Image (cartoon, rainbow, N blue to C red; front, side, top):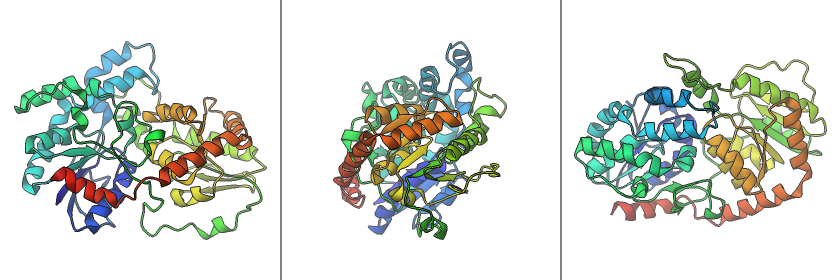
Amino acid sequence: MRVLCTTLGSPSHGRAQLPLLRALARAGHQVLVVTTEALAPVFHDDDVEVTAVLPQFDPVALLGPHLGELQDSDDLSLASPVLMRLMMRSLAGPGVKPHLDLLAPLAREFRPDLILRDGMDMGAVLTAELLGVPHLPTPSGFSNIMDPAEVLPRLNERRRELGLPERDDPLSLVAHGRVDYVPPAFTFSRYLPPTLSYRQTVDVERRQVLPPWAAGLPTDRPWVYAAIGTALPVMHEHMGGGSTPLPVKVPEAADSLEAILGAAAELDDCTVIVSTSGVPVDTGGLPGHVHVTERVPQPLLLESVDLFVTHGGFNSVREALRTGTPLAVLPHFGDQYTNAERVVELGLGGHITDRSASGIAGMCRTLLADPVPRARARAARLAMLTLPDVEQAVGDLEGIAG
């Protein structure tokens, strides 16, 4: 079987695809990843072919034609429903053409039996329809919040331009299903039906081990781990800079980390580990119970953590569900706000709305003292463990591809 996979957005989108692509490659299937130059390194250690020809995903460029409608809105926050709705429409707008012009010829030459696509990639939807092959989105936060009804009119416009038949059903966007790593009872998808669910793995990046210093930290107190992910600096560059910046304030990664470090200092009865993702921070004067690192193998560390302070990206949420770790979500943009609300709905933790150091520390103390999030997180982990291993996806996808 020949499988074409597209990856856009941030490195987290590629990491979500890795377990699935590895399983396909191990089974002897040929896998071609079509991505951007910035994301190609995510796949370099795996037995897949990588072609970095796609343009950098730029949400500001896609939203350009809709800026007037956004400026007229009373809500100019990154959690604005107007902003999310316009983003959904723009993904299938005329701006998809440069992407499609690159992807479609390459796919015709490769002749895939199946396309696995980034959840934001409408060019891959159209390419699959042009070739008459099935396509499925891989796990991503944007897939969870995407309303197919918002996408359908623009997608039908592109179909008409390409001579493809229009579709009446918004769920034609996922006509062959979708892949997820979350049990249906704990789904974060607002609009798409559950289909192929597999167990989230704790071994995403190869040869991961915890650094030796982690084994030497005190274990007679609760452990709190905090991280802001890898997408925020990239999103800030897109949305705050460029020729047409959005009229929306984007949280600074350094400001969030400063508040998190202030909260960590207040949690003097805990061991606190803060991952900066390489963002420069001032660590002078921090007390000894706070440990700052640029990066740490997050899925492994979460196995020993009592609370995870997170930006609420879908990768991080899934990794916490897999390890039964309660969440304190400090969202920054996009699906992270919806994920924070869903975490509260499911009883898995809290949504930090007071972004000050004292507000973050207060939420941490509340969650550490409450047995309910721990019990719910354990229930989510048990539900996760009932899902089949991702290796089973190979046979399922072979069946879909025929």
